[in-house]
Length: 358
Ligand code: ADP
Ligand code: GN1
Ligand code: MG
Image (cartoon, rainbow, N blue to C red; front, side, top):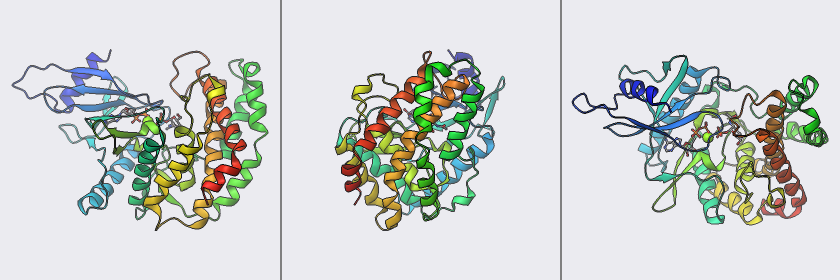
């Protein structure tokens, strides 16, 4: 699969020296839900190539521009010893372009970070602390980056009220006759609308930051040898926002011992030791930057992200699975059920977890 595109891409990105045989291999890597991510190898260094999802990201030039602004900012930090992690850089074509059109599909290339791996489920609290610390270092490095420079590639990305409105529209349309199979989940979501007001009130007290906005565990690379943090990746949704969302998305994706689409719901719980490790790991690099209200807001961030991603999975299920890549029928509904189970366990443990934030 993609052998034809591999040849064309290797030409564009100059992956073979002209004197050598033009052998190229291409294979899928990772488990992202949005883009098609492949490793392309020729005779020169391998690169990651991605077929970008234009349903999700209609403004590709802006997407690449955002990520490259951040690359450059991090590089300056790294040169002055203020950022230690590797930086995922876009690779230019031989004609200095960053996007390539092959039969209407849009591709880009990123430097491959070798000797690394990503995780879909956090193994233990040490690993959680390492990953949270890396996201904290990333946030700290962006502290003096002007968030207004980032184009809103997905407007209102973490706007809970609008996400619930989108769910209501999908329910009203019920285009694919799926509502009856998801009525319990819809009712559950609509019973949680109180969280919208809590979030909106909090937002008025918080500084706007340049955020990653997708701090899930597989958007971070670990070193294969030392198992320390290697790089924060997937900068596609870097936009202005609030740190509570980045904290919340870590809680959502680090704390459960089950994968995000697991149907073993009895096991979908918040591991308290992992929650504690996230707080420690994330807050340490931010300790001189974070405000008191910001740290207190993290509890709401955890609730909002678990609920909101569940709402998004459920909406996509009712809409006909246009947004998230699925591997089976009902995949998005399974994901939504999983996220709501996690959200409910989070609420159950409120007392203990909030104490960990104090
Ligand atoms: P998506 O937007 O679809 O989530 P990502 O950019 O997160 O795509 O990439 C998906 C996966 O591919 C990552 O979780 C990681 O495992 C792998 N990956 C992406 N970029 C790199 C890279 N530069 N080096 C090594 N692995 C990468
Ligand atoms: C998507 O791209 P990926 O797989 O890292 C999504 C996130 C969701 C996540 C749920 C651009 O992240 O917002 O939280 O799936 N990214 C986009 O797993 O919508
Ligand atoms: Mg990703």
